[in-house]
Image (cartoon, rainbow, N blue to C red; front, side, top):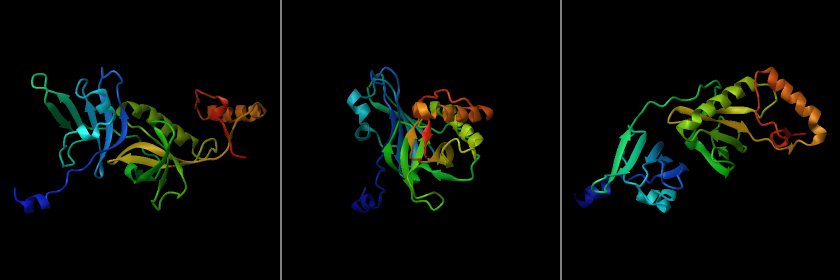
Length: 225
């Protein structure tokens, strides 16, 4: 290959880790959600492929992945005989969450400003279809989190217009597949014993909609006034 060929060849895309679930003992598979250019890809690493430190900071040890957009999931393992790193890619059909709100935004168009939990973070968007204020973002990072996210998305549909929950601002999609949602960020205080009657009234309205909260402690009530 000539110098001209090298100069014109596209540089490999540097993966950026968006989410990860690493098995501490390396007894089970470790899972990663990566940004690769303008796409989100998933990587599963078999036990025994890398040491624990590498699993925590995998990017320098990852192989070069195919440049095309035809794959979704890469599986990394070691050849049992040679010990060489093996990469297998696939594109399984991945179902998204039902969309009921008219607004949807690409997850890569959100700028994270503060992490709250592995699935929840504060973010801002530069899109004109969303408020410029900080929003609460909740996503299903991996496939096993999708049923829970589907259930919560449905709950917010039932709560639409009830004023019992933060305003639902839209769906979040990843490569076109809905996998999260955006909520308005509310400022307020947690409930106290003096708010017991108001809390019971709010729970009653929730039950009338056919919903059960499941964890009605004082910190899950927010008083904005």
